[in-house]
Length: 217
Image (tube, rainbow, N blue to C red; front, side):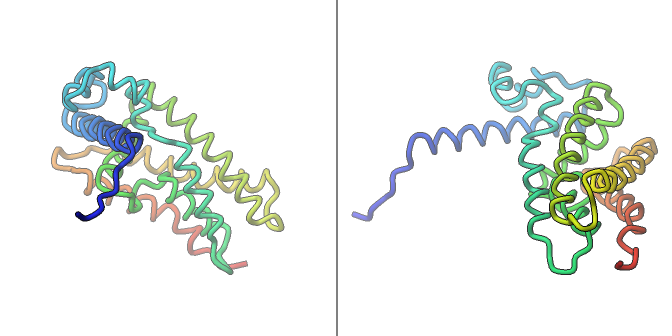
């Protein structure tokens, strides 16, 4: 009889939790895209995911938290991207790659379609819903602070802590300002997540072009 490895109960529980968590995210994004963020309740999300409201709160404290899943992982992804910089790479190039890894540039390639859709919804809603705006501002501040610190560590001869923080703030501010205008523009009902991603990517690429085109020192 062939040997079959037994999956530990803890691993099975982890898989079940991940499936439930993803089901909640998928249900929420679907509702946010078609019904609207403010018109969607926690109970609506739980029902669409075929779980109880109590189960929703076992995974997320609120709708706002659902739009910002695992922020620490996003920051760690940015730090890892900076640590893997290539020889001769300029600070701004390292910084932009770090921000993309963290998901701060939602037009870039993400893990899968679900995460791309979450990024698009987050970018839109964080500029129109005050409760989400506050959550977004806090998450951005925490990420900027750590990314700036890591930029200083990576290029100590080029930036002190203030200079590194200033560059991070300038880049993130430029992108945020451009996206604010983008999301004030009319969006057709046929704009799906993929099309919105393209619009975001085009906008951010245009805004960041001066940094990317700047001659090497």
